[in-house]
Amino acid sequence: MAEAGGRAAQLKSSGLRHGWTTGACATAATTAAYTALLTGDFPDPVTITLPKGQQPAFALAVEALADGSGPADSHGSAAAGGVGWGGPVGVSWAMAGVVKDAGDDPDVTHGALVRATVWHGAPGSGVVFRAGPGVGTVTKAGLPLAVGEPAINPVPRQMIRDAVAGVAARCGGTGDVVVQVSVDHGEEIARSTWNPRLGILGGLSILGTTGIVVPYSCSAWIDSIRRGVDVARAAGRTHVAGCTGSTSEKVAVAVHGLPEDALLDMGDFAGAVLKYLKRHPVDRLTIAGGFAKLSKLAAGHLDLHSSRSQVDKGYLAGLARTGGASEELVAAVAAANTGLEAVQLCAAAGVPLGDLVAEAARATALGVLVGAPVAVDVICIDRAGNIVGRA
Image 1: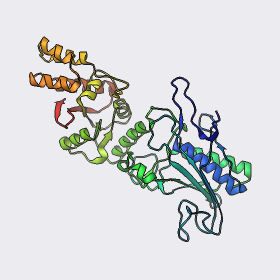
Image 2 (image 1 turned 60 degrees about the vertical axis):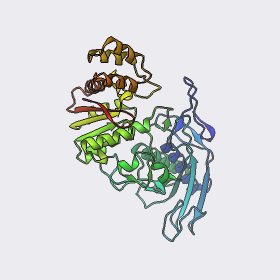
Image 3 (image 1 turned 45 degrees about the vertical axis):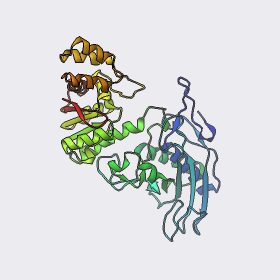
Image 4 (image 1 turned 135 degrees about the vertical axis):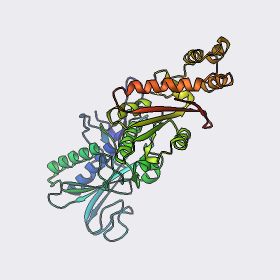
């Protein structure tokens, strides 16, 4: 598929548009920049090949070419020998930038300008990666990159290496280059991601395994959950907490005294936490979340988002009956407006619905983890952060 201007592909089945990952954008920018470095001309639009063979085209948002006498534009180096948005002073370099189109996915990097600046490297060096402004650096073990490396993930690195090799073959280059990837305002955007907690400091990660963003797949969030487990294990943590939000996170810390790198921002993706821990276990997992969300886990749902699973009042009514609720209370629970109202009605009558939900949620979790040496406890809270159930 070729999409002129980098416009996202149409998802025929749902009417939603695919988008492009930051890795795909960095690859397109690198391709254009290296081509210009060798030929003096920027291809625009620039076409790349994704890991599964698709060939999207991207329009360039910015471009600059320096002849070695100094920065070619205001984004270049500010001081001799320094590296800014452009390349090092006194060295020929080319810079190209692509605006990320995430399609119809609610991606925090949608609209970000991803730049690649390329200059010739030492003979035999191959492709050397550097983090420019807005791209983070790895500072903790447990990630798929060594400490000190730019946060450009393995698949985007390979995409960029392949693109460089293709340009070198077409345009007579050696393929020995330095590729500096930057994202305008990336450090600010990264504050709303997991990167600071994962020890990726200074900006965003350049991500993507296919080059394509599937709307509402939330693949970046799930990948962050996995990296959070990896970092916790590398730090020697034997107890982690999967939390549905910031309030439940605070409760987990208050109850168990867990450090920040043991906290997993699970959100709605309970299944992602459980399935990854089944393959990469720790001794203990605490699941902490709002009563309504954890009632969905109790009922067997692993995706807790409101658009993909609902609070089952009939299920809650059945649990209340097993806990000794009168038929009048059972009917009231079945007719409750919210899960929280149901647990409050039961609490007033001395029926431990919160504990029953926590026990059932724990059973669901253990069912997914079966065979893995992971102990599980569950904490249900209300909106104010009060504990309404534990198992």
